[in-house]
Length: 294
Image (cartoon, rainbow, N blue to C red; front, side, top):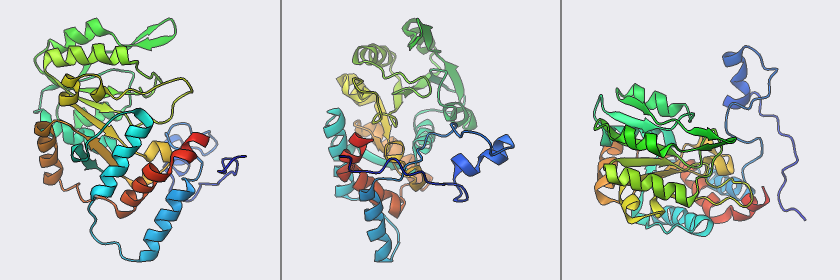
């Protein structure tokens, strides 16, 4: 017997929904299937909705900070679901993965320096890099027998360019759908560590995988990658709460963590959304059964 309702069709039109209401302005018609935005047409888990309802009924929505239960919820989720042990002091905030990428660019590179990406890849990687005056360096994926793979020889060549200071990894990869194996990530990590670059690993899609697939956090594959990886995660894709603008940034290295924190303090994006914090904590502490049934 199912516990959750994934059958009811919900009309999202006229709710300021980017996915549905945004089609006419962008494509000139609403007569399309909106497969251009990665969110679901299911309601968020009832446990999340109830937590938000209780927070609304409190009636005061003042300045918000995230305290230890919030961080414990994140650490607990990644330990249970992915076997990754995160210390709560490693966790920092961002209003989304893309703002976290922008903050990392500001923290770890200078104008004109190179940032490596692996196309075809999530388009904001490019716009965020170019928008801050940095140079995109491409390490294209290879299509081998119908399966995308990393081109490690090309990666080494591109990282020999001293202008490359930062690497953006998409893991699992959007849009090609690859869940990188531990062996692939170990090889990728060894190359990056040898070249002395910082890696920002966008792992927002890690929770929704086909049966039999296993996500491996890049920061877990070696001591070197733990100390040189910035991991961005969020409950937004997993629980369909992207509009609540809350993400977590996991940075084991104190040096990198302090540099990142200095940027988010400078641009004043550390405050947080009261509803986003409530939803994240509820999702990561009470959302396992909903996700398993999804």
